[in-house]
Length: 74
Ligand SMILES: [Zn+2]
Image 1: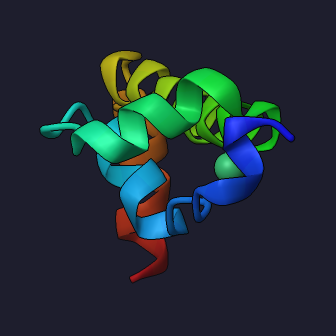
Image 2: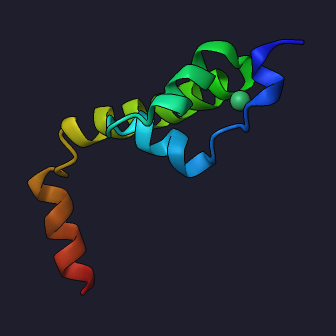
Image 3: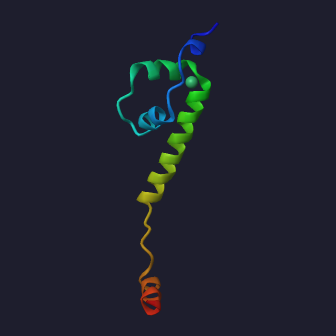
C-alpha cells in the first residue's frame, strides 16, 4: 500500500493557494510529492495562471482609432 492512499487529497482550494505561491501546508506538499493526480491538478492551475499573467503583461490597449469608433457609437 502506498502512502498516498492513506492521505486525503488536498482540496482544490489548497491546490489553488499553492499555485498562487502562498504558503504551502506541509502535509499538502508531502502529498503532492506522492500523488500524481494532485500534481496534474496543480499543473493545470499553474497553466491557467501563466496564461492569465501572459495576457495581463501583453499590451491590451486598443489603438486610438478603435477608441474613436467606440466613442462614435456611444
Ligand atoms: Zn492527491
